[in-house]
Image 1 (cartoon, rainbow, N blue to C red):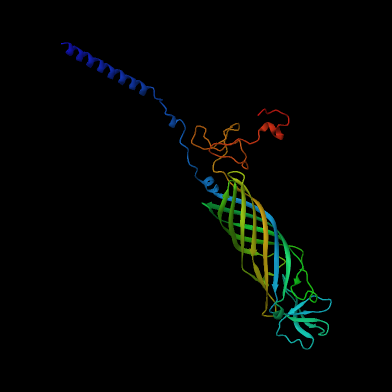
Image 2: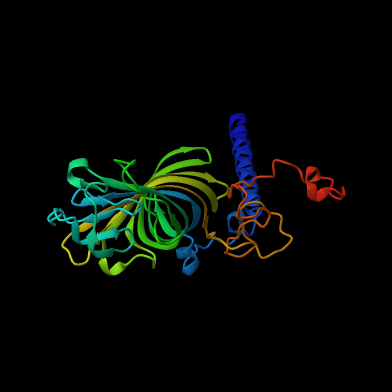
Length: 355
C-alpha cells in the first residue's frame, strides 16, 4: 500500500516538473525579439550601371623627361666635304673624276635639300665612301612628354590605351668618323611637337606593402611634327618597354615613377633618286605621374557623418566615409584614424581642437 502511494506521488511530481519546463520554454520563445537583429538593416544592394562600369577604369596622367638618340646610316652613300661648307651626300654611282657632281644633298634630316652641278677641288676637299667607314651621323634630342592613359586591371594584368603629346628639341648632328675632316650640321628648326597613340599591356610582378612593381609595354603609332616633310617619310610603329614603381596612397589614388626605353625609326626618301636615309630615333624616358580610380560607392550624403568605413544609413545603399580624402590611405572594412592627432597639426594652431 505504501509502495503504491509512493509511486503515485512520484508520477505527480514528474508531471509537475514537465509542465514547469514546458512553461519556461514557452516563456523563452515569447521573449525572442519581434524583429531579429539580422533583419535590422536592409540587405546591401550591389552597385550596377554606369558607376559600376566606370569604377573599373584607371585614369593616369604622366609627364617627365626624354633623351633621344638620333642615328643616321649613310653606308649607302658617298660623302663630299668641301672647305668651309656643309657635308654633301650623293649616289656612289655618280662620276666624280671631273671635279663635278650632277646632284647631291646637303640636308637630309626632316626634309631633303638637293643641289645640282656641285663643283669641288679634289686636292683640298675631302671625299669618302660611306660603305668603307660605316659612316653615321648622330645627335641627341630632348623631350618633355605629356601622356594620358585609361586601363582596366584584371587580376594582376592590365590592358588599355593612351595618347601622348611630346615637345621635342633636336641638337647638332656630328659624324662618327673623321671628325677632324667632316663638319657637323644643325637641324633647320629649334623645336617641334610629336604625337603618339598606343595600346597598353602590362602585369604586376611584385608587391611590398603599399609599393607595387609592374612591367608594361606601349605599342602604337607616332606622328612626327609639322617640321618634318611627311610626303617623303615612311615610318612604322613604335615600341616602348618600361617598368612602373607605384606607391598606393589610397584605395583610389597612386603616384608612380616609370623609366622606359623607346624603339622607333623612319626612312627619308631622297627625291630624284632611288636612295633612302634610315633614321633611328630611339629614346630613354623617365616619367612621373598619378593614377586615379573612381570610387565604386558614393560619398555619404550626411555632411557631419564621422563613420570611417563603408556603411549604410537604414537603406540598402552603401556609402563610403566622408572622413578621409581620396588621396589618404583608408581601409574600407575597419577604418583608420590619422596617425597624427589634429591637435598637433598646423590647422589647429589656434588650439581650438583638443583631440
